Length: 221
Image 1 (cartoon, rainbow, N blue to C red):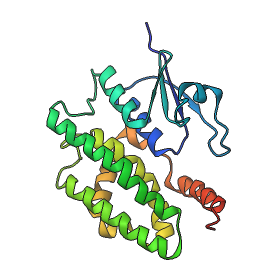
Image 2: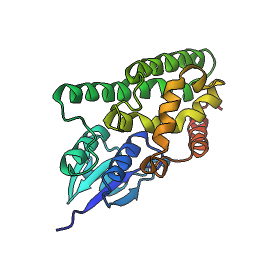
Image 3: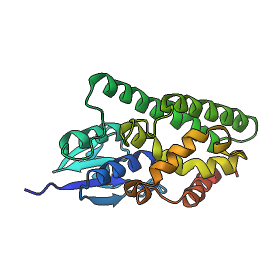
């Protein structure tokens, strides 16, 4: 029996990109369904499959929905466990990976969002917090090629979608991430050398155009 895999997603979603990279790493064939989030026009299928949060991404595997990006990635890693293991097999390393993935979900997402949803003094404070947060990430990365060590893994997959926001954040904030967080940018460029990532992540300038639309809606431009 062939698995039926459907992904409900939005093209620029940081969270959906994680799932798409995981599926690419495992070489899983799936049907992609784009949700119309710009007009808040959620499909009946999305509302049926994720009635609690009504958010993307949603992975539908043989008719059964799995929601929340980190949960989906862990599910993919467990079900299709014969290729490209994402989470460490060691229990302690696995716990650490989950800790840093949660750090990305809470801290990194919040400070990144603050940069493109603020202006003036709030933006200046957001820039400072953004760089401090990425310096913490650099501390965890250390001198390793990837957060997962010698190979791309769960934490790398969790964080790399945020690289698509770097151009927007630098343009809006008037600074270069690489000037203060060179290790993170070098890591991101290493990740981008992987075909599964380079083919999945959208163009940064296209993301900037989208964020510009959101900023206009918020009255920031």
